[in-house]
Image (cartoon, rainbow, N blue to C red; front, side, top):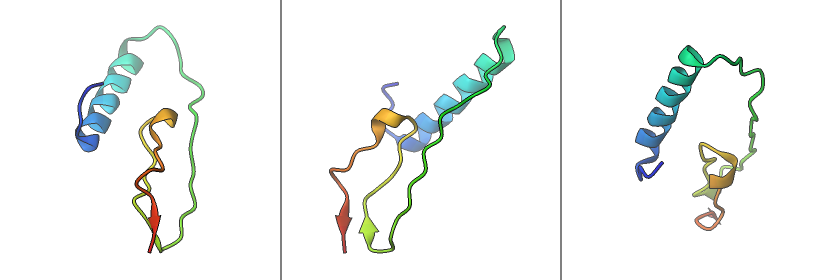
Length: 62
């Protein structure tokens, strides 16, 4: 998706997933989860809505 706003993009993905679940002839039984442990002094880290959108460039320790 080309939406730059991460909140809007996440909402768009949720809406798309709901539409697929409502209309698909398939049952989704597995979805990959990502977990991250962070220290309080780590700034700028965020898990993206998919595995290939986790960028570490803006991460810093303070």
